[in-house]
Picture 1 (cartoon, helix red, strand yellow):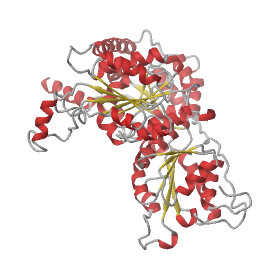
Picture 2 (cartoon, rainbow, N blue to C red; picture 1 turned 180 degrees about the horizontal axis):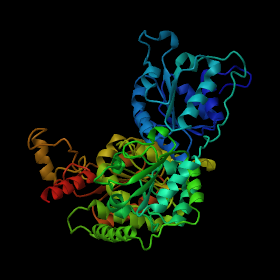
Picture 3 (cartoon, rainbow, N blue to C red; picture 1 turned 45 degrees about the vertical axis):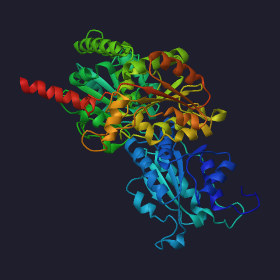
Picture 4 (tube, rainbow, N blue to C red; picture 1 turned 60 degrees about the horizontal axis):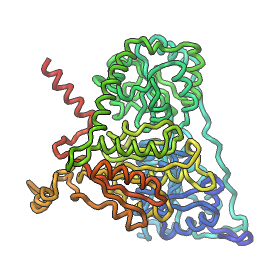
Length: 599
């Protein structure tokens, strides 16, 4: 650490700028020359979480930004470190998660000479970030870092990037006090809607026979639950949450249409879209998934999003969800939708009863003796055990989920009652985010001295539900968890393949392996047979369990939840080798097309 009398180094100025901005944790991987920044940050009281791969560190920083509402900070080396961290930049941009990325680079005088890990990162990242910049001098480092930090979460969130040459990091300021200081930034200014748009929107809502509110993760990020809960409760409008918008209103809410999603989309005639995008997750707002005559009213902080796909630019509202919803609520006054007697609601309730009964039956169906577990029953066993350990009304569990089937099926298997308690692959459908997200959630909710500020009070248990393929992207981050004493509980749903396995027995798999990668051999989706993933946790100082039966799974869940080290529960499930490689919504579309072709 620089003494009070000696001029500070560039590394100290950078670390001090972060501290003065209110940064309490940095994710990343060190090397020359950024190790000096990390060490100075630690000396100034900032925690540094060292990862095993820059991709996972970048993912963690983006998720931390989403959970806390302030940019997550990622520190990497130049060249290959920046290239690896680009995965986090893509994740930040696609999901609108705020991140500040700091990267070292070769000395300024070596530009174009083939310096150590030389890369023109500013040129590379300008088109992928909100701001990519290099400080021209030591005295301007605080201003540049503050600008990049501010840009990452003012307006539509994304990434701010600062390139830090080695000569700046290792340079020494001319004055003992060095340079000017940064200061904590206020929350981004909030904009409301013009009253003409509000009036037009309320008239459409009042006239609707089948109104629907769509709640996206943007509403969760904006902490809009404080205005959305009374709005839905008083207007009685049914709602549908995106996967990460779950919890803004409780899954148990009577107007939640999640279990009647298809019916809600087909029947809705006026759709209020709050912090969600009409992209692939919501089928672009297009028929036949949606009612072809539906009117979409988009409310978004980003004006570029208004009118996109099925959205109507003349109806869209650019503004902060918190203010706009309050405006709408006030303008609607005592009006409420007659949910109890409307034909739309009756259709929804019938669909909900049918689908919930079907899901409950699948979840309750235990495997025959000697047969492997299904996803549905495995999740039922895990959820039942967890709810006994941590009641939902305390909001005690944060769920992280990735892997196509694991994520899809677990979405409805683990209800949440509070926002920002469910993280998944998101808009970019990024595989490999799971363990980085779990580390970010642990930091956001369980940081020492009450620094975590992401949600409901009280310590949170982080539970990661991982497909075996997705787990493989970042499995070594178990060592990161163990090193930092993070008691994350990880379930690996092991079916031996990407999407599904290719064999139902060890002998069948070995026969495939013997034929190599050609016809009759291993497929492009093949993974190893019953890989012992739990041993990675054991090797890193955690606990590992391998389970095959409901009873073993329940015991492992209880023991794993109570452990104070990282735990991997390796869940052997059915291979599903007869399944088709497609998303559920694709399969439904094909079924509908076949049905229509017969008419």
